[in-house]
Amino acid sequence: MESCMKTTTTTTTTDHQLSPTSVLAPPTPVVLSPCAACKILRRRCTDKCMLAPYFPPTDPHKFTIAHRVFGASNIIKLLQELPEFRRADAVSSMVYEANARLRDPIYGCTGTICMLQKQISVLQAELAKARAEKVNLQCRESHILTLIHMQMEQHLPVSPSPQQQNLFENLCFVDDSAGIGSPEPLWT
Image (tube, rainbow, N blue to C red):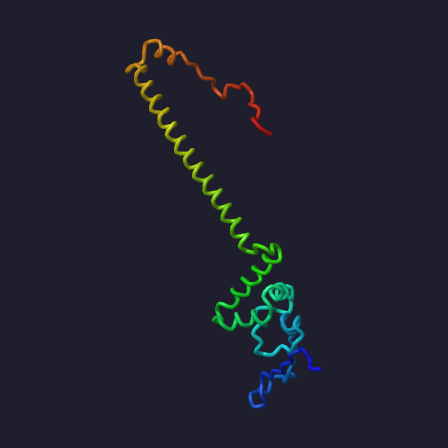
């Protein structure tokens, strides 16, 4: 039976590139495990495996979910039809849709989308109501300030009365340095 492990040997230096001070290191084989898709499908993972970049061996659950809903051949067909720069987004979308379909077999991600759209509608209505209330309160405040200003203009004399002048002249302020004692702090 063929091995599912890929083995690659790399050599970084050649004999004619060595300097007298360099040390020749033995080539190190790099052992890569098969992608999660090939591992689950029990097939040999090649260097040109289309699924390897999107289903790493460390996350087999990701492929298992997508495989249950879409099937491996449909996943491969879909990825072949797309340009390479869009494949990662397509895989994450397939995994999301498969998760939604497993949670809600009838509506899948459509149910989630409808629920989120309803929440958006409710929140937009609440926001509109709050904005209307804010405008209403601003109008009330403006009206009240106008009334107060008009009332003050009607009742205030132009010059202070003699009683008000006597009141201001007779005011006495306490000298803080008069030795009353140190005031207690307001908070501790």
